Length: 439
Image (tube, rainbow, N blue to C red; front, side):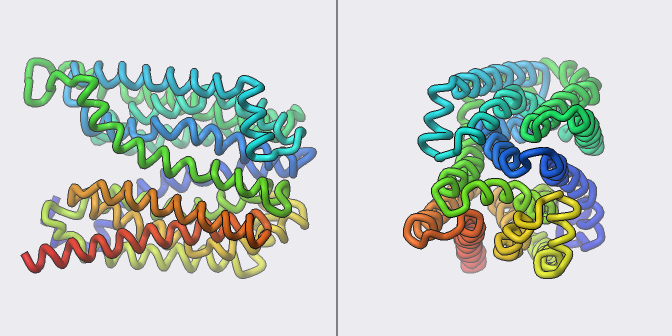
């Protein structure tokens, strides 16, 4: 690769595009499932139940998100591969058992009915949907472990192929269940689980040659150290902690929204609104790996990457605004997503509030790339805690004291939390760069 200072915008774009396409395909998943559910009977109840079940599953999934980064970084040969694979299996089994324990009715009802305040009908639909998603986190964990192996072998295109397998299998199963008349929340949960399991199997098959090559790497202590669990935990816990805290946010939001005005309508539209926002956020989320790849040992790629991030951020902001503030929002929510006219109207204000979040996602991906490249990852944990703290603070004020509609309060909380996280990293990076200049 050329010197980082010689990298052009075109080269960055060509490197970013395949990664962005993978994220966009994943981002289309939730809006598609929500659109199917919205066209089935009792749409409001099922959308709300599916949204809660999905966020609960994401919360249990959070400890295994960093398995891809871990396999990419730690696997050097036969011994390290076998040790980290064993660690991954143990972690995923533990997560599955913990989720199964949570599904025991007294525990589940305490959380969903007593804490969140879900009505009995939605709580029942959520319980069955979450049970259907029982093996979803573990499947994602093993998939990400093998994706790390593929990326390490420079087979990133196969990662996109796996995503395509998931989308096709998820879509096919959703259509079949739709015509069979299965309740919407169950349809969504089944389609997600089926799609991820098939993707995991496909990823493992595509990683076969890379695994064989890895297993052949033996005898070189420098390339394949005797990796110990203590070393794995030392590497993994700081990474997973940030993810756990970050992915706990939707569950926190659900708790407060359940206490606010119009809780059923709010819980019904939030998955659809978040799905639309995530489609535009995905273009920014895919930029983090690009930033790390092109930043350079001395951050010499900072300037050109900042320019590309600015262009990308404005692009996603304008695109999102065109939908949020024009009749296209009605087309998206009513005709494409299948929401009723009442829920369509209910969705517009939260969407308009969150219109800047895709731009902030590009900004924070650039900031994270610089921070990771500078080996100052503690700042990322600090930024995450600041974001979560501000989200909770805004929800307390808007719902507990201002009696605001739940969906609008959630949108404001997401926006304020992310903005404060961005600002913290902005000033931290600025001070770091000024210190380097003075030094």
